[in-house]
Length: 196
Ligand code: HEC
Image (cartoon, rainbow, N blue to C red; front, side, top):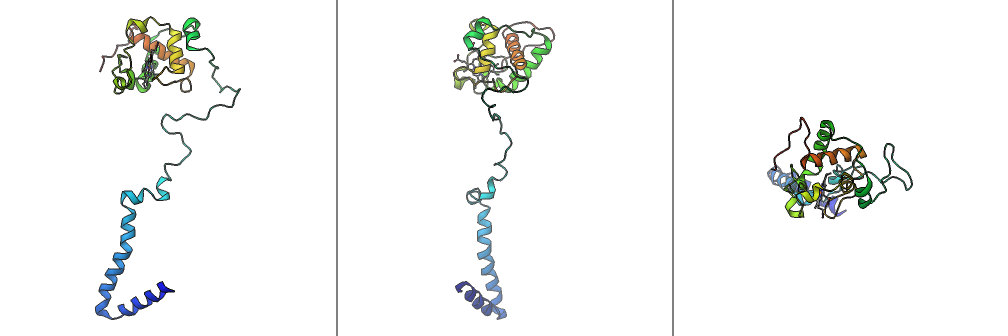
């Protein structure tokens, strides 16, 4: 009631041509304020439709698809039940250190491991020093078995994330072979990257 009688009075007031202009200006300013306000970042980001594109079912970067139902195995995957220690002792690398395997491993390494380990695995990636990432081309790491590297990539180790969910066994062996190449194994046709 109050609003409609107020509007009625405003329109009567505006009926006189001399006053019309100022009434239009005041009404315009009143209407423009909330519209302009909704575009300012603080207010606009609190509006419910602002998240529509964000809240969706697609997987985000590094998000993992739902874990398989207990007792089932995804098609094309073998369950890996060894511990890192068991893998270190007895897991054999079935993939020869060929140019193709090392090349595939390089692609995976550069997009998943380089941030920490650096291009030549010296521990000098952009976040390497912050996490205390070691230079894994040192003898201490070079002497570890292929099975251990596989196990570490699968389960992660302390500050190193696990990758078991992300890579197939074949991809993990390609990564092992690339780590071996960075640690000094010669592979015809492949050039070892410089550190940094
Ligand atoms: C978030 C940083 C980070 C990323 C990404 C990362 N690592 Fe690591 N990695 C580490 C750290 C830290 C260690 C040392 C772990 C320790 O001994 O505490 C390590 C250790 C290792 C070791 C030596 C483990 C041992 O003790 O035998 C290998 C091999 C390795 N990483 C390979 C990889 C590979 C391959 C990838 C990519 C698939 C990768 N890392 C991705 C941080 C990372």
